Length: 286
Image (cartoon, rainbow, N blue to C red; front, side, top):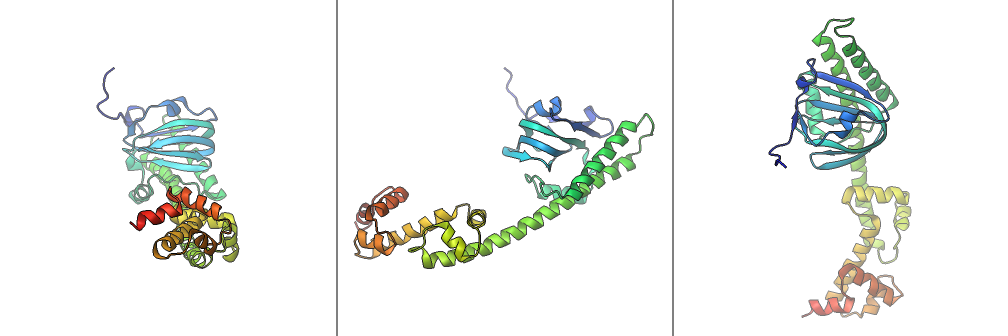
Protein backbone atom coordinates (compact mmCIF):
# COMPACT_ATOMS: atom_id res chain seq x y z
CA UNK A 1 0.00 0.00 0.00
CA UNK A 2 1.31 3.42 -0.93
CA UNK A 3 2.25 5.55 2.07
CA UNK A 4 0.21 8.75 2.32
CA UNK A 5 2.53 11.75 2.25
CA UNK A 6 -0.04 14.44 3.03
CA UNK A 7 -3.62 15.02 4.10
CA UNK A 8 -5.98 15.24 1.09
CA UNK A 9 -7.32 18.71 0.31
CA UNK A 10 -10.80 19.08 -1.16
CA UNK A 11 -11.18 22.04 -3.52
CA UNK A 12 -14.64 23.54 -3.75
CA UNK A 13 -14.16 24.73 -7.33
CA UNK A 14 -13.79 21.12 -8.45
CA UNK A 15 -17.41 20.38 -7.60
CA UNK A 16 -19.01 23.82 -7.76
CA UNK A 17 -18.11 26.62 -10.20
CA UNK A 18 -20.31 28.94 -8.10
CA UNK A 19 -18.05 28.60 -5.06
CA UNK A 20 -20.89 27.21 -2.94
CA UNK A 21 -22.32 23.78 -2.20
CA UNK A 22 -25.55 23.61 -0.24
CA UNK A 23 -27.82 20.67 0.41
CA UNK A 24 -30.32 19.39 2.92
CA UNK A 25 -29.34 16.19 4.70
CA UNK A 26 -32.20 13.93 5.69
CA UNK A 27 -32.22 11.51 8.61
CA UNK A 28 -29.98 9.14 6.65
CA UNK A 29 -27.51 11.96 5.99
CA UNK A 30 -25.77 12.46 2.69
CA UNK A 31 -23.46 9.55 1.89
CA UNK A 32 -20.68 11.81 0.60
CA UNK A 33 -20.69 13.90 3.77
CA UNK A 34 -20.92 10.98 6.19
CA UNK A 35 -18.34 8.62 4.67
CA UNK A 36 -15.43 10.82 3.58
CA UNK A 37 -12.03 10.09 5.09
CA UNK A 38 -10.10 12.68 7.07
CA UNK A 39 -9.27 15.64 4.83
CA UNK A 40 -8.85 19.41 4.62
CA UNK A 41 -10.95 21.88 2.67
CA UNK A 42 -9.98 25.14 1.02
CA UNK A 43 -13.31 26.64 2.10
CA UNK A 44 -15.66 27.09 5.04
CA UNK A 45 -18.13 24.40 6.01
CA UNK A 46 -21.21 25.04 8.13
CA UNK A 47 -23.23 22.12 9.45
CA UNK A 48 -26.62 23.20 10.76
CA UNK A 49 -27.78 20.14 12.70
CA UNK A 50 -31.51 20.48 13.29
CA UNK A 51 -31.87 17.22 15.18
CA UNK A 52 -30.14 13.93 15.86
CA UNK A 53 -26.56 13.32 16.94
CA UNK A 54 -23.18 13.17 15.25
CA UNK A 55 -19.62 12.31 16.20
CA UNK A 56 -16.97 14.51 14.52
CA UNK A 57 -13.20 14.76 14.69
CA UNK A 58 -11.69 18.17 13.93
CA UNK A 59 -7.91 18.54 14.22
CA UNK A 60 -7.68 15.57 16.61
CA UNK A 61 -10.42 16.83 18.90
CA UNK A 62 -13.60 14.77 19.13
CA UNK A 63 -17.08 16.23 19.32
CA UNK A 64 -20.20 14.33 20.29
CA UNK A 65 -22.92 16.78 19.35
CA UNK A 66 -26.71 16.86 19.35
CA UNK A 67 -29.01 19.21 17.48
CA UNK A 68 -29.96 21.91 17.33
CA UNK A 69 -26.53 23.43 16.80
CA UNK A 70 -24.20 24.90 14.21
CA UNK A 71 -20.68 23.62 13.64
CA UNK A 72 -18.21 25.72 11.65
CA UNK A 73 -15.18 24.00 10.10
CA UNK A 74 -12.44 26.40 9.01
CA UNK A 75 -10.36 26.11 5.84
CA UNK A 76 -7.34 23.90 6.52
CA UNK A 77 -8.76 22.01 9.49
CA UNK A 78 -8.46 18.23 9.18
CA UNK A 79 -11.83 16.66 9.87
CA UNK A 80 -14.20 13.79 9.28
CA UNK A 81 -17.42 12.33 10.65
CA UNK A 82 -17.11 9.12 12.66
CA UNK A 83 -20.79 8.37 13.12
CA UNK A 84 -24.28 9.86 13.24
CA UNK A 85 -27.74 8.86 14.39
CA UNK A 86 -31.08 10.19 13.11
CA UNK A 87 -29.28 13.35 12.06
CA UNK A 88 -30.83 15.85 9.71
CA UNK A 89 -30.12 19.44 8.79
CA UNK A 90 -28.18 21.59 6.34
CA UNK A 91 -24.69 21.36 4.87
CA UNK A 92 -23.18 24.56 3.47
CA UNK A 93 -19.73 24.86 1.90
CA UNK A 94 -18.70 28.36 0.85
CA UNK A 95 -15.59 29.98 -0.56
CA UNK A 96 -13.74 32.21 1.87
CA UNK A 97 -14.64 35.29 -0.19
CA UNK A 98 -18.33 34.72 0.58
CA UNK A 99 -17.73 35.01 4.34
CA UNK A 100 -17.23 38.62 5.54
CA UNK A 101 -13.84 39.18 7.17
CA UNK A 102 -15.43 40.35 10.44
CA UNK A 103 -17.38 37.08 10.58
CA UNK A 104 -14.24 35.07 9.79
CA UNK A 105 -12.46 36.62 12.77
CA UNK A 106 -15.24 35.43 15.08
CA UNK A 107 -15.19 31.89 13.68
CA UNK A 108 -11.41 31.68 13.95
CA UNK A 109 -11.54 32.92 17.54
CA UNK A 110 -14.10 30.32 18.60
CA UNK A 111 -12.36 27.33 16.97
CA UNK A 112 -13.62 23.95 18.25
CA UNK A 113 -16.69 25.47 19.87
CA UNK A 114 -19.99 24.17 18.45
CA UNK A 115 -22.70 26.82 18.68
CA UNK A 116 -25.60 25.31 20.62
CA UNK A 117 -27.07 28.50 22.06
CA UNK A 118 -29.73 28.83 19.40
CA UNK A 119 -32.87 30.60 20.48
CA UNK A 120 -36.09 29.76 18.66
CA UNK A 121 -35.76 33.02 16.74
CA UNK A 122 -32.16 32.38 15.62
CA UNK A 123 -32.97 28.76 14.80
CA UNK A 124 -35.81 29.83 12.50
CA UNK A 125 -33.75 32.61 10.91
CA UNK A 126 -30.91 30.20 10.16
CA UNK A 127 -33.36 27.76 8.59
CA UNK A 128 -34.98 30.46 6.49
CA UNK A 129 -31.67 31.90 5.29
CA UNK A 130 -30.37 28.46 4.27
CA UNK A 131 -33.62 27.70 2.47
CA UNK A 132 -33.31 31.02 0.63
CA UNK A 133 -29.73 30.28 -0.41
CA UNK A 134 -30.75 26.83 -1.60
CA UNK A 135 -33.68 28.22 -3.60
CA UNK A 136 -31.51 30.86 -5.24
CA UNK A 137 -28.73 28.41 -6.16
CA UNK A 138 -31.32 26.01 -7.60
CA UNK A 139 -32.78 28.82 -9.75
CA UNK A 140 -29.49 29.94 -11.28
CA UNK A 141 -29.29 29.16 -15.00
CA UNK A 142 -32.93 28.10 -14.93
CA UNK A 143 -35.08 31.05 -13.92
CA UNK A 144 -32.44 33.54 -12.76
CA UNK A 145 -29.01 34.65 -13.96
CA UNK A 146 -26.04 34.22 -11.65
CA UNK A 147 -25.54 37.26 -9.43
CA UNK A 148 -22.56 36.94 -7.07
CA UNK A 149 -23.67 39.95 -5.01
CA UNK A 150 -27.01 38.33 -4.20
CA UNK A 151 -25.33 35.07 -3.28
CA UNK A 152 -22.72 36.84 -1.20
CA UNK A 153 -25.37 38.86 0.67
CA UNK A 154 -27.44 35.75 1.34
CA UNK A 155 -24.47 33.84 2.77
CA UNK A 156 -23.42 36.90 4.77
CA UNK A 157 -26.90 37.03 6.29
CA UNK A 158 -26.62 33.40 7.39
CA UNK A 159 -23.13 33.79 8.84
CA UNK A 160 -24.31 36.95 10.57
CA UNK A 161 -26.94 34.94 12.43
CA UNK A 162 -24.22 32.46 13.45
CA UNK A 163 -22.03 35.28 14.72
CA UNK A 164 -24.97 36.54 16.78
CA UNK A 165 -25.45 33.07 18.27
CA UNK A 166 -21.70 32.88 18.95
CA UNK A 167 -21.74 36.20 20.79
CA UNK A 168 -24.70 35.10 22.90
CA UNK A 169 -23.00 31.81 23.78
CA UNK A 170 -19.71 33.51 24.68
CA UNK A 171 -21.52 36.07 26.85
CA UNK A 172 -23.42 33.34 28.66
CA UNK A 173 -20.23 31.31 29.12
CA UNK A 174 -18.35 34.33 30.47
CA UNK A 175 -21.18 35.00 32.90
CA UNK A 176 -21.19 31.38 33.97
CA UNK A 177 -17.41 31.29 34.40
CA UNK A 178 -17.58 34.43 36.54
CA UNK A 179 -20.32 32.88 38.65
CA UNK A 180 -18.34 29.64 38.98
CA UNK A 181 -15.29 31.57 40.16
CA UNK A 182 -17.36 33.39 42.81
CA UNK A 183 -18.85 30.11 44.01
CA UNK A 184 -15.39 28.52 44.17
CA UNK A 185 -14.12 31.32 46.41
CA UNK A 186 -17.08 30.94 48.77
CA UNK A 187 -16.77 27.15 48.77
CA UNK A 188 -13.10 27.28 49.70
CA UNK A 189 -13.86 29.62 52.58
CA UNK A 190 -16.53 27.39 54.12
CA UNK A 191 -14.52 24.25 53.39
CA UNK A 192 -11.52 25.56 55.32
CA UNK A 193 -13.78 26.11 58.33
CA UNK A 194 -16.00 23.03 58.24
CA UNK A 195 -14.02 20.21 56.61
CA UNK A 196 -13.59 18.36 59.91
CA UNK A 197 -17.32 18.32 60.62
CA UNK A 198 -19.04 18.43 57.22
CA UNK A 199 -18.22 15.62 54.80
CA UNK A 200 -21.06 15.67 52.26
CA UNK A 201 -21.34 17.95 49.20
CA UNK A 202 -24.96 18.59 50.18
CA UNK A 203 -23.76 20.11 53.46
CA UNK A 204 -21.75 22.76 51.62
CA UNK A 205 -24.48 23.33 49.08
CA UNK A 206 -26.83 24.09 51.96
CA UNK A 207 -24.37 26.55 53.51
CA UNK A 208 -24.05 28.34 50.16
CA UNK A 209 -27.80 28.22 49.42
CA UNK A 210 -27.23 26.21 46.23
CA UNK A 211 -28.40 22.85 44.99
CA UNK A 212 -25.78 20.08 45.30
CA UNK A 213 -25.86 19.55 41.53
CA UNK A 214 -25.26 23.21 40.74
CA UNK A 215 -22.47 23.51 43.31
CA UNK A 216 -20.73 20.45 41.89
CA UNK A 217 -21.12 21.70 38.33
CA UNK A 218 -19.67 25.11 39.21
CA UNK A 219 -16.70 23.64 41.11
CA UNK A 220 -15.93 21.22 38.28
CA UNK A 221 -16.19 24.08 35.81
CA UNK A 222 -13.72 26.16 37.78
CA UNK A 223 -11.25 23.44 38.83
CA UNK A 224 -11.89 20.27 36.86
CA UNK A 225 -12.60 18.32 40.06
CA UNK A 226 -15.76 17.55 42.02
CA UNK A 227 -16.85 18.85 45.42
CA UNK A 228 -16.22 15.40 46.88
CA UNK A 229 -12.64 15.50 45.62
CA UNK A 230 -11.96 18.85 47.31
CA UNK A 231 -13.52 17.80 50.61
CA UNK A 232 -11.35 14.71 50.73
CA UNK A 233 -8.31 16.68 49.55
CA UNK A 234 -8.69 19.14 52.44
CA UNK A 235 -9.05 16.30 54.95
CA UNK A 236 -6.02 14.38 53.69
CA UNK A 237 -3.91 17.53 53.53
CA UNK A 238 -4.71 18.39 57.15
CA UNK A 239 -4.03 14.78 58.18
CA UNK A 240 -0.59 14.98 56.54
CA UNK A 241 0.15 18.21 58.39
CA UNK A 242 -0.81 16.70 61.73
CA UNK A 243 1.17 13.51 61.06
CA UNK A 244 4.27 15.48 60.12
CA UNK A 245 4.17 18.41 62.53
CA UNK A 246 2.60 16.91 65.68
CA UNK A 247 3.00 13.88 67.90
CA UNK A 248 -0.73 13.14 67.95
CA UNK A 249 -1.60 9.49 67.50
CA UNK A 250 -3.36 8.39 64.33
CA UNK A 251 -6.49 7.77 66.38
CA UNK A 252 -6.36 11.30 67.82
CA UNK A 253 -5.88 12.76 64.36
CA UNK A 254 -8.82 10.76 63.04
CA UNK A 255 -11.02 12.07 65.85
CA UNK A 256 -9.92 15.66 65.28
CA UNK A 257 -10.83 15.31 61.63
CA UNK A 258 -14.28 14.04 62.51
CA UNK A 259 -13.81 10.29 62.18
CA UNK A 260 -14.82 8.20 65.19
CA UNK A 261 -14.05 5.08 63.17
CA UNK A 262 -10.26 5.00 63.25
CA UNK A 263 -10.06 2.05 60.82
CA UNK A 264 -12.23 3.87 58.25
CA UNK A 265 -10.00 6.95 58.42
CA UNK A 266 -6.92 4.78 57.89
CA UNK A 267 -8.49 3.17 54.79
CA UNK A 268 -9.47 6.58 53.45
CA UNK A 269 -5.95 7.93 53.94
CA UNK A 270 -4.40 4.88 52.29
CA UNK A 271 -6.72 5.10 49.29
CA UNK A 272 -5.49 8.60 48.62
CA UNK A 273 -1.77 8.31 49.45
CA UNK A 274 -1.13 4.59 48.80
CA UNK A 275 0.29 4.24 52.33
CA UNK A 276 -1.10 4.10 55.85
CA UNK A 277 -0.90 7.12 58.19
CA UNK A 278 1.81 5.34 60.19
CA UNK A 279 3.86 4.60 57.07
CA UNK A 280 3.50 8.21 55.93
CA UNK A 281 4.80 9.48 59.28
CA UNK A 282 7.76 7.11 59.30
CA UNK A 283 8.77 7.98 55.73
CA UNK A 284 8.75 11.70 56.43
CA UNK A 285 10.48 11.50 59.81
CA UNK A 286 13.49 9.66 58.53
